[in-house]
Amino acid sequence: MSAEPDTVPVHQSLIQPILLAGAPREPVILLWTLTAAFCLPLRGWFLLPLAFAFHAGLTACARRDDQFFPILLRALKFRVRYA
Image (tube, rainbow, N blue to C red):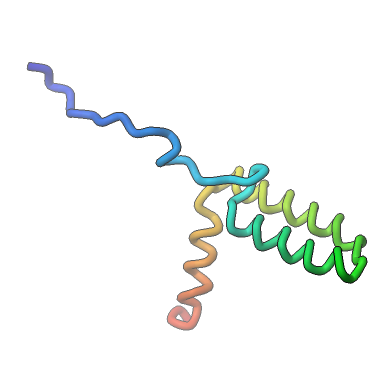
């Protein structure tokens, strides 16, 4: 008998976060929905570079730490208890 511990193969889709264009799914959907809501009816095309910059920031945060946004949301949720 071998002394190795038993291992179970885990599919990578269960480990890796769900990303849209390199950024976490929920913030990206919120960002581009709000951008479309303000740009299309209000002709606020000047907001598009700001949205692209924010998306680049989301991508950089996700590349550095893939659990950044779940932890940020949890910290904002329990902010009242920490104060």
